[in-house]
Image (tube, rainbow, N blue to C red; front, top):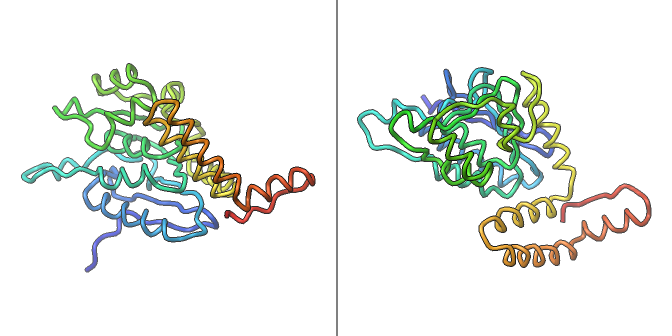
Length: 253
């Protein structure tokens, strides 16, 4: 028998939808981590895919953290190699979250560019209650997303917050009706995929690289990439379409 497939992906036009299916709680097991990385690499090789949606099967759990059974009687593993790859993915990634996104599940959403949460979604990094700390980038990515003090509060207390509270602090982009997160994420992904792909990739690079350096260096990164964008075929088409009062026909070049 072959290995059980816990992560699958489907191509829908110019977007890819990744589904994590590891019942009962969609835990971030070693197998899920390996298969997620494999799926990302497969998607990256498909040129026409311009945006990715990441979700999970079921409505109760987006992902309830790491599989703690894998901590028993063996050395720990870190999901960092897959989460780092997701964080640096060249195409935009949108998380569609329903149910609990705790521990590694919350860290998974932090590696996505955008997050659409259903009203029943809950987020948290409860590792402190197990005598541990977040190990999938939570201590680094959460402060960058919501600010140092709020991130420390969430990690020090290990408490869950609702989708509405997550929206309030900037952890998610939108809260939608229960059962509609995936559909709404797909709609947003399709809108992003319709934009010139080179521009989208450059915007992502500017933001992510700029966050790691002083403002002056970030502005230099932006200026350099602006010059590259200015010379693309899509920039010429976009300007021409604007002047001619017509819809642009982007070639993603």
